[in-house]
Image (cartoon, rainbow over all chains, first blue to last red):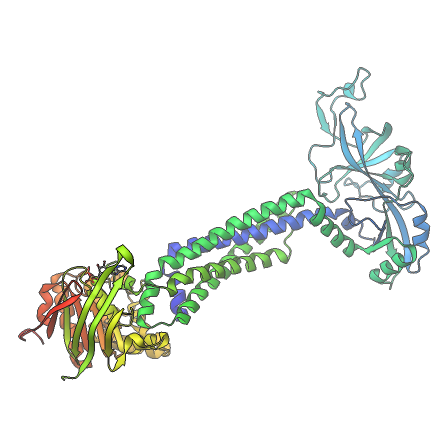
Length: 399
Length: 235
Ligand SMILES: Nc1ncnc2c1ncn2[C@@H]1O[C@H](COP(=O)(O)OP(=O)(O)OP(=O)(O)O)[C@@H](O)[C@H]1O
Ligand SMILES: [Mg+2]
């Protein structure tokens, strides 16, 4: 009878393909949305990802993400360095600040302060120059951080720091090494333009030394946002993080924990995530709705055939089993097609080098499959009702 | 040959309630004999389909009694009714109602598969039965690929394949031309002989009246009279 059910399913080629397409589309939509979401979250913890050598991140106990931070006083460094198992510990500071460009326009950027001694955490200039370019007086490395067209400098020399006030209509070009900026009225010299990991939310980044940060923001009393710790060989990051937290009273998280913290923080706090979730829910509702309705209609249009089977002596259980087999097979087939299409899209994004937040993680396809399966089975359960209540008279009608 | 296999008495059935209430059967009393071809004829809406639906355990009557093969059909449980249809009844419909996605052989095998018979055995018997109705050459055809007369032959094969005691046909020839209608009725007569089956045929089609053993004339939910057909055409 299952064979018959499957034949019935395939019987009307057009209807079956339509149904499969609907299910595939829904699975695609869900998987894509979740991959997109995963992509954004990955950008959310880009700071953690780009500092590969940091096994443990130390922060103020109130900090739970790379996004909303408060600084610690400099004594934290000594405290952390004295914990057993710490190979080395370097500071990192984050500050949002307005950068003024040579023509007078300004842009909010994230100023990332780096340990002067080690320059740990400095992105490599793409032209092969050394990170020591950051040691040039007032030097900053500029990075788009996932933005487009936000780091711009006047094309012509006459528009650079003009004496007659801002030249806000001046034609612009991309910021490049050699350009000067003003940060809190202090001079900053761009010595390299880098391409590190894009951020979420996207924002331009300026990397500089911690001493430069102090020069630019002299009124701050605390500068250290994170201490990045490398564990000694043979010391597990988890153990070290726990030990640091216990001895110093600061919050200490392994890189993986901190990434997870950051994602959790976005889920709870970010309005962008809220908007994205709303869109995702909308997409899912529409997709699932369409799938459900199509499957329902499929059963409904086959009512007469079920009525015939019923007249012939098929039990309710048989009919139920047939309908559920039809629903699950369509759901699994459709989900497979949709997820394959999504994986293919992701691959396309990757090879084409598009700057698009997309990360195909296990929960994307899983939610896709489970989602369409649940919806299809629910639709089947709903469409079963008329089958079970079938008026036997249907089979005697003329058409 | 004269055992009564179907016996109904004062069968009543209405649809709907209040002003919309329709008395489909007012009082139907009828006996049908073993291996008899009983035709039920009458104007549209007189209750023919309702009557045979009750006999086929597809519909419950409001009142009266209805006994088939010694079973009090309306009072069977839900499962027993399903088993009753599955084992004892074969249906032939006006609209053929073959499953469009299945081959002719699979269509005919359905009643056996429903009974739980293994697929190979069911398919083998289906092929044999299709041979009995002269369709052995088209086992793998789809219903859409054959004519109406051929469809009704396949439908008869499906109604017969599980060797039921009663075949219920509702307007089996209404969608067929004269020629096909005749040959379908001839086939039915031949097979009911060889298989020792009782046949009920609901029809409007006076061209096939000659194939009946007896004809029950219905009107307005009642049987007006029963006519015995003098045989010259049955074969
Ligand atoms: N499910 C139903 N609900 C309401 N009324 C019904 C239903 N089925 C049949 N009827 C009514 O019951 C009466 C008898 O119907 P039935 O189908 O038994 O007649 P019939 O003799 O088979 O007619 P026809 O020759 O047109 O097939 C008709 O008036 C019909 O409208
Ligand atoms: Mg009728």
